[in-house]
Image (cartoon, rainbow, N blue to C red; front, side, top):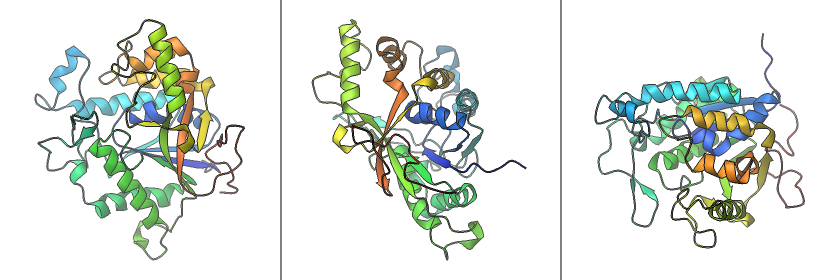
Length: 307
């Protein structure tokens, strides 16, 4: 019988590739250290933009088979990160990617036409109950998801935040849905974040190297998008530079969504492993453990004892 890891992390993401972009290095580091890493993906990303011309026939307005393809990409990404426990919320195909469009102010909003089964339309309690069952099975001490704005406004990211937050609360209630398992209170909840100072430094390095197209429109000294977090709001950083190669391999596995000459790889090439090897977080629940000289925890499990 496989022994349950003493420390267990649960991540809740909206689409395949979100996990590798946001916490790929953390996932790889913790998996390599023998900690439990469970990823729950809420949709298959059926409405994603396809960056590979020969696969454009998979698009929602053509064969509508992108979700199945991205399922395979996600499996390859998880293999690259060393993560063996991955589930789709409610099973593959339970909720569909809601799609999005861009607001004039530069953030995502719900699309004009949304599928009946879109995650954005999911009943909150129904979706949360599916996650409650996972929480009570896995019994994670730490949960990672998006902030209340979903990073950049995507409706599925916002919904994932809502579902994860509600499910964490419901899972801790001893009398709630006892058929879904024994109650479990998650000790610490984090929101994934991107450091403003790191982002500005990375953009500056790109521009100094003559790259004006990666992260187009972002000025190292100007306003930054909603997904960038002021450093004073950060709570933790996981330094996983030794695992950046795994993160980049996971990103490369999401071939329909991320190109090798895209901004993620450009930043890595110009700044080095520090660009994506340090992943930042905001604490949303729980007590912070010991911090470093910058006032940040260096381990999401900091201050926790026992299983």
